[in-house]
Length: 207
Image (tube, rainbow, N blue to C red; front, top):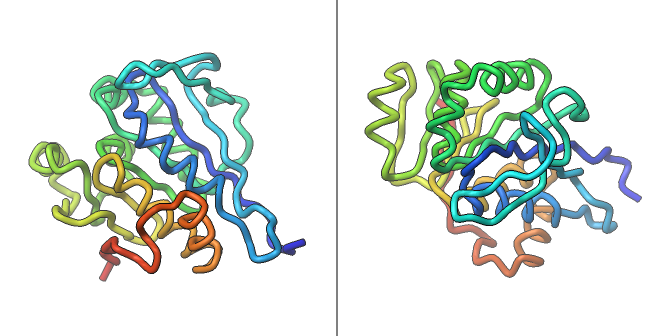
């Protein structure tokens, strides 16, 4: 058995979140294993309320924990989707993201989830990315963030953001490698039969 403790990865859910934005990272983190077969992460979903949410394209998904009863969170994944246009003006959600950031090891986003991270003040003075269709809107809305385009994900230390939808899987595998090693990321990619390893994603690190 690995002597490394499995980190807690929370996937934030809300109405009209983009399905693959959260399902892709959920699969990647859940699949990651150390060489002895022990899992690297405990992966679960968190929302403002327990129950079901309806994703952007209509699939209904369950919320494991609400904001008040979630376990300690080491890594947060904030997905995108049409629902971010509502959540960006939801002080309960934004304040919760801020509170998670106080103790988390890493804060991550997929697609327009970066808007929620930026609204929480986590991207001020940072590099980040988002879905290609939202790059200009993000630049206009958050001028204190250096928004990069034509990259799969951006690693700026405490915050890691990805472009849209499938790019969230690339970002997740990068985070797995960063936290648990290349073998763990490779095991996850192989289990998913994902065309990633030894790598087709470009990470942009902070200067």
